[in-house]
Length: 334
Length: 285
Picture 1 (spheres, helix red, strand yellow):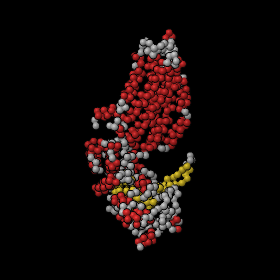
Picture 2 (cartoon, each protein chain N blue to C red):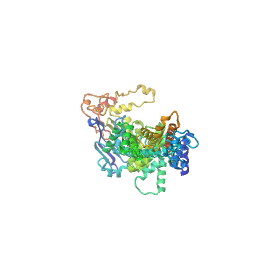
Picture 3 (cartoon, rainbow over the protein chains, first blue to last red):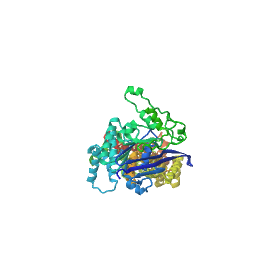
Picture 4 (tube, rainbow over the protein chains, first blue to last red):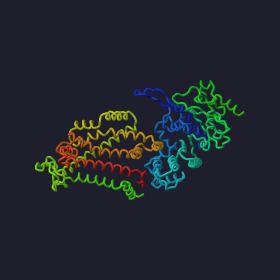
């Protein structure tokens, strides 16, 4: 039972209809997420990486039922979350929480830190005395590295990092098992990023949390995640252990992402070969035929524009969604 | 923080504009006292005519003189404050409450009811508000109640629109989303988060409108649609007095100045109140 995935996403699809005019005529579909599958084991972290607009945040929102999925299943402890009735969903809702990207917009400006956490804590309906509530909130504040006195402060009196800590404490107040971190550090500066990442890791060790970590910063993801999904235009193109992301990237898109990271060493930067992608990410309304990545792929062949590649599970721990990745990697290795 | 500290802080922020805010509060107080104690403050009756005093100049007996029918201007000003106060405060209260309620329903539910409310708002906004209020005013008759109804009804769509927009943006915000994830009751989210965060904007509009409504009521009286003669209102006093603007300037000038000061005082007080209840400005002003 120990290796049972706590969250299992199967073929998740989120499509938005585009309508026009008063008659609401349907003129197209935005396939924000188009068939995403992954699973996370208890106590592990899965990273979801991709450029803007690839559907990584939407995936997170669909798991929480914040946007309604058009297809697929999300299992939490082997129960399908998406097909649950609202009352059933209310019961397990608090077990999956979210940490938001924007530490400024995610706290009510009219509430003190203490009451932000308290409100979420007491919403479980259990009976507590006033002292117990105060004690629990203060414990949460200390757990995220703030002092008890910080509880009196209002959001505008806190720094970005401190606000993000309040956001984490608020998520923890629900006693969650899974936390979806929606780019929790991308709005913070580098030194604070490290503190928040370390805090998240500490909390994971102490409370046995499972993270779904959505980000675009590869270095951060490699540090915190055990397993990484690379997303492109609503699809997962490659999944691998986070250590292999830098040492053994197989999909051309992953290679391009890795080579886009600037290297500090001047000589290495001059000599290394970078894979430059041309153009923009295509619009999810007019998806390219065949492999979604083929218009920008430097290695694309004729077959790529006609057939849609499926996940190649030759290495079950490292599936890749590309026809020619084996040939490609032969070339580069030689 | 104790209750005493909170009150002290409220006072400091509220009066942070200095002398202006004291004057505004002072004038509103004066306005209230005048309206409530009008019968005690003056020996005359507002509608008692005395043709011997027709167009009398200011004197000790009649501080601002008398109008064409020999009625004391000060007395009529005091009684006129009553009408202005009742009409503006009640119609704005009704307007803002109904507007907030309907805007909240339209913004939060986002279903067919929302479409109905918002389309109705569009229809009413297409009609000039002045024209709309005049029409309603004529339809419901010349009573104070009818006037209040017409005024509140006329300002309703702008409040609904404003509230609708505020609710739409607020309900998308991350902190409301987080509360939903935590199973916090919808009623609690609305009362504790949506309304307080929409309140400052509504408050400012409310006070702006309060002044505007006194003006509108005066305009209606001036046009002869609002409160009927001989009841004293500031608007009808200006209307009557402006014919003698060169000979007896006080007849139009005194009620006009009262209007100006009250509108200004309400606006300043509204701004101060908004500042005072905003925790972001705590200790900064």
